[in-house]
Image 1 (cartoon, rainbow, N blue to C red):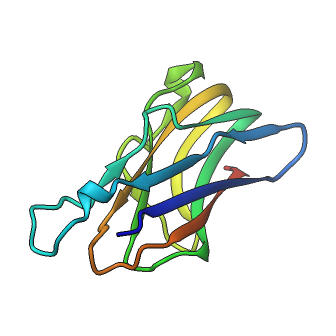
Image 2: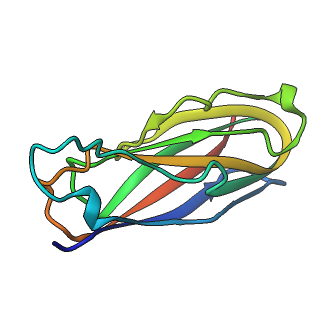
Length: 151
């Protein structure tokens, strides 16, 4: 049986003046053949990245919000992709709120978390759910698009 390889690409959009917004990291995951052997086996179909798989840097002195969406490049809609913030990074923790629960990524913008001022190395974690023996073995690719907006 072929392996299922999922590649996540990351893009960002920054809006406004005198700001800095950067996304770094990617996740390439190959579902082990031993995990998908026969239909009917006790198969969880969920895979989680490292807690610091991707990081965000934000430098903007006003209130801001980060939204997130996915852009299917070569993706199976039966596979669900989630993201969450696993820490504050470097910055004032009292000025960042939300995003600590997994958010399902869709093909439209969803609010992710809010903040004020600067933060560096905000850690993000991903989770892929609903992998199944009924999904063909293939290299699936999706972009994750982060947008910084003044609040």
